[in-house]
Amino acid sequence: MKVPAVMMKYCPRCNAHTEHTVTLYKAGKRRSLAQGERRFAAKNKGYGSKRAAEQKRFAKVTKKQVLKLKCKKCGHILHTDGIRLKRIEIKG
Image 1 (tube, rainbow, N blue to C red):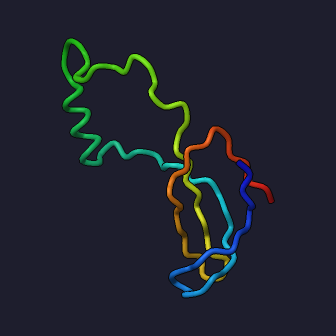
Image 2 (cartoon, rainbow, N blue to C red):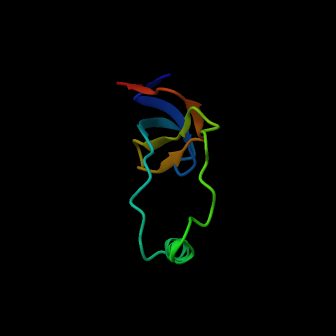
């Protein structure tokens, strides 16, 4: 799917439709001291097998892509709902 690099969207902070720059959302680095990471490490620790069965085959072929929209006027960042796509191309 081809997506324009700049699009007009509603900005809740400006309370108007303004130009937004479009980039692809990428998750940040996971923090090893976060509570969820510590809990997962504690459950995974020990001898023997894994705590949960490994998935034999993938159910999904694609991942959900989230677009990050940044208002050119005030810099407010919005995230779109994830869309299942095989390939995304930001045209600019």
